[in-house]
Image 1 (spheres, rainbow, N blue to C red):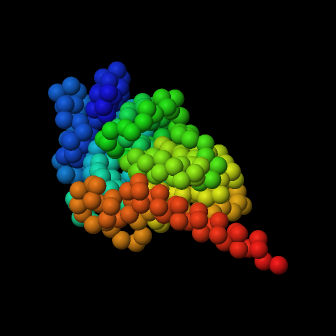
Image 2 (cartoon, helix red, strand yellow; image 1 turned 60 degrees about the horizontal axis):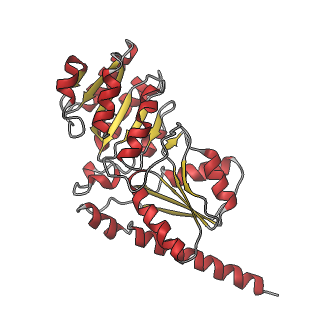
Length: 312
């Protein structure tokens, strides 16, 4: 089942749902004929769409709104904060082509701060599925949540069969390694999975965690990773500031814990537009490049520890 099928099934079963779009129908092309008046296209008006969605939610509806992630989270930010976040309305915000998925688009269309923006709004939760299968697994519980939710839409095929027992705020632990923990969300899960295989071929034990929701985040999974493995890697197609690295840092500080953390994210710049595989290679996010970076850090840490132990 794909996203459109899963959404259609849920919406047809409950008349409270309304599907909306700001002229972004790529993932929901067949819904207008299926939903009739419960499908609303406002045109390229993200702010007006969010405001209308809030009004519908105040009248007992559950709007599921769609727009390009960059414009939904930035252009309509104040409307999300004020009209949806403050009253904690159950509006679901689906951001299309987030992060590296915007591929050939330039900086104006690259959503690399969306997680930071949305998690910064009180009451708004954030779901970042690893692929379309993961999206479908979590969709119903996210839609049924009383909280507003930002969903990073991800249409990519799955590289594994995901755990179907989805819970908001609970991560999916793929493997229980003891040397390195890789914390990842969204489309880079595939690259993290490839990196794990390459690292384990070198004899490095890897704990791979698909976070699924980054707000609320699975605190127990993150803290256990920090306690039980020698290196914690945060991997995301997002700016370094405000995303997963910031979330983990805040969590460790709150619990007065120290950990060896390797952040893999974009620094203060946008990525070079290209086809997805070329983007990943140019920016250093292929499975091989990620594995090489982690392997290098583990070797350096081992050498540093050995040198320290030799001191009189």
